[in-house]
View 1 (cartoon, rainbow, N blue to C red):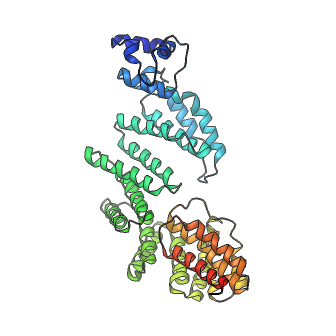
View 2 (cartoon, rainbow, N blue to C red; view 1 turned 60 degrees about the vertical axis):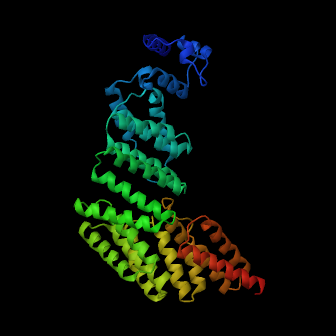
View 3 (spheres, one colour; view 1 turned 90 degrees about the vertical axis):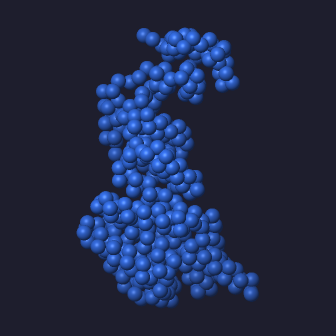
Length: 414
């Protein structure tokens, strides 16, 4: 059986390279000699360097796994169900253990690319590190095979990993680089991954406060969705548009997008969209119109929809319930509602969502102030300020900061 060292030596001689010529800053002649004689195992970085010097792919140096074996492995890995929760460690650990023995022997193939993507996701979920290299290999694999839809999806996944860590600019730059490469090389991309790309670019622009650019890309995506006559991402785009118009006080445009969302929900019988549309109305009455009675009335309708979905978003019911009760000057009941919130769902990462959630601490602070507990009020308000400190300015961040400053002045006797 031909070993790795034998394979390197054979290819080097075919290309008429001496050990000295193959060696360089990253690998000495002596280390190369040990590798060629199978007395040392090279790292993947060293293998990549050797392959680059030889002008070949790393897979040509490795003993490739058969296509049938890879297909069987891919099916087995995919059969392990991974919940959407970010705490789904056990199934991802199982996936890691299955793929690990093959990771350094994967050829350039569709199955290998998919396995590299799944391996990268599992690495991220389990370790939160060492996930980029396999994903970059997947991107390279898909590009070599001209599988451009998979190539783009892998880029979007790489960007999303940055997004969930609130590295919004880095995430955006990854997407913009992919879009530029697509346009320069005239890649043919299907509508669905293209809509994913446009939606995420719009989201990222808004996350760093580049609103004009974000709205432009968002409208581009809505236009593409309509032209292609597909509903994919249309609800997400309408939600984003409705939220944006609400934040910037554009009542007419807000009502337009809420109407579009209602039509979408009726057509698709989508409970999630129905719930979002109703929640947005509740939130609008509580936070912007200050009609707390109307907000509270609509909130009970939202509760019924949310009950059908389980308790995934029940915290938002209690957040708005507490705000309605606060506005009606029922401060003790408001605090009781706020205390029902242990934590918010961990799948929200946009500054809009996170700032909205953290209004909780400002409202709790105001309730404590009304009860004469100023020290407790300041403590709660400061938590909110710290949590939104690094986010872009929004009406929510402004409210949180203003609440804290108001309480500080009161505590200082000003």
